[in-house]
Image (cartoon, rainbow, N blue to C red):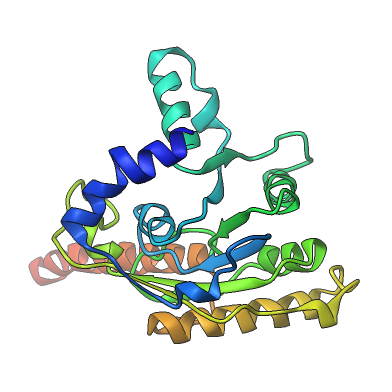
Length: 244
């Protein structure tokens, strides 16, 4: 109930009025039945704008901590995240990845839409990075179609590391459903999982227009931080060399 209140009355109308998001390919999303919406991830605002363009509820998994923080703040946090279409990762599994899979399978098993970011984290520089194979495993185990999705402009509205961004009109594009039923029963074949994931990422790249980098986003962030540290060290070393 809170989800629809936020979407149609409290939050959604404000976002529509201010940002006027545009959507293309909405007809590719089924009106009923399970489907996996695999999207790029440029900003923490992605999970607000993408579901805003659809009449159906889209559910994402989130850290369990968002739902277990004690006190009044924790209560409001839990209500907001659950109302905004997020559910906690099932911590009964051996690890977070397994818990996320269980939560996702439950959502799809109920015939709902599940949203996932194959990159695993936000892009720090606007490029599209290598997808993790969890999306492929989920597609094979659930049998649900994968709908590639691209959200463009949210990194301008809500850039990483900043409280406020600048105004732009976000665009959401949905691609044609991808059917991987031909690989049924092969969810433990890592080569098949990689092939499926790469196919999904290619479609996301085509929809978003982003430059693709065949590297995990977390690794790319580490490399960029290391380059920045080296550059800072070299810059600090220059005055010492001149002085000597």
